[in-house]
Amino acid sequence: MSIEAIYQLFSASEGVCTDTRQIRPGVLFFALRGTSYNGNLFAAAALEQGASYAIIDDESCKVSDRCLLVQDVLSCLQELARFHRRRFTIPFIAVTGSNGKTTTKELIHSVLSTTYKTYATKGNLNNHIGIPLTLLSIKEDAEMAIIEMGANHQKEIEGYCRIAEPTHGIITNIGKAHLEGFGGLEGVKKGKGELYAYLKSSGGTAFINSANPLLMDIARPEQAVFYPQENDFYSCTLTETNPYICFRAANGDQVQTQLIGRYNFDNIAAALCIARYFDVPDAAANRAISAYVPDNNRSQVIRQGTNTVLLDAYNANPSSMQAALENFASLPGSGKVVILGDMFELGEESEAEHERLGKMICEKKFDTVLLCGTHMARALKTCPEALYFTDRPALENYLSTVSFTGAQILIKGSRGMGLEKLLPLL
Image: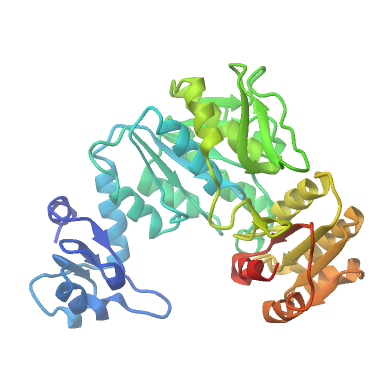
């Protein structure tokens, strides 16, 4: 069946679905394959649950005429998404980077939504499946679209650009993330730079942080908008009782945010730059930034009894660890507790990066340091005064025996560590 014919079915459907646990009546079910599952085996169940059609690539699973056989389900999903994207002539803004891309995407969505009907990636559906699903969720009333792109190896962003065909784009930063897949920091620069390369070749516009030397090193100056520009952004103020970013905006507004950490100021500046570029009134953009509340274990401030917990446990890499620790150390007050979990996907750099992290922790002289995970054993070598736990259950056992009072507590680690589960014990 041609992609045009499938698109006609999609246009008459209630959307697409790849998980039989989320089937709604009238959707198209795409029977994707994974390393440990074969979606073709669930085609019959999807139809029974109300899917209008099931897109399959295993003929033996064709249980009715409503099973549409294609050569490869994933490729079909991606091609359908590109076909749908080409129905729009609105700005499509791609967001990628080593750190902060989801927060930046949410901030951009917040400011643009004050003026335009804006669609954006939900959560972090930013991979080879999530990006097509995001594109296919965009309705005819869209005036703006924001597509988050994650990557852990070279050529990945290039491929996503061929599907989403962004007209604008931003790289939040380049750091030591996914070093194993990218092959080192130079590989990260090259991989993230694929967005700049695409925008240059397609005549698109890049928003570039001129204060970031790594971004300036790979910047393509054609059709670029640089930020922060003179007199756009001033200072942010952090206090003991209110650790959130406060800044004075271009129109003179003093803006109190609900975001912690100076590292988030670049994300704010990016959103405000894009807002101004698309003629969003300054006052409206500032209100949107002020109202934004982070969630999903990203830069969250949580009150636990007399303690203040800075929960940043969605992910971790050497660059984001350094930024979080420097910010935490800069906050006034005592009774600082640092709980850190393993940094994953660092490949051959893992031992050296964890040792480097330990040295940094030592220099900050926090009151209590708790390290968790097999990789963190290397950080213990350079931070011997820390308490070390091989895994989260061991750390949970320890926390059940101690009590922190009036403490400031930073929790950070890679997603697989699940450190947010420690909250009830603090």
